[in-house]
Length: 109
Image (cartoon, rainbow, N blue to C red; front, side):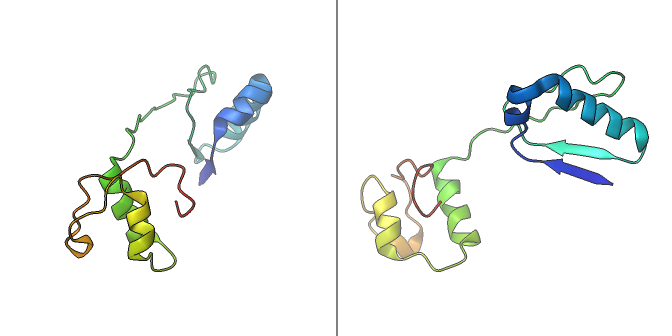
């Protein structure tokens, strides 16, 4: 069984000890349970349970735009893509994304 918790740092910040107690109790009561979390900080000290940490690097802007195009629920217009770029590419159809700006705060991300 897999239990997924997104944005765990908020719970750690609010009541770290209560969260650790909850996770430890869950793990003690179910030996098949695995917990997957996303967080910017480690949980640390879950009794005898081992915490594996995988640190992920941020996507480059080029890959972020490619991911946005592939996973978007709607077509993204050339104008919207142009608005994401520091300068307009010579040919958007050939994926000339060499000058991509910061996509992290864009309204379509």
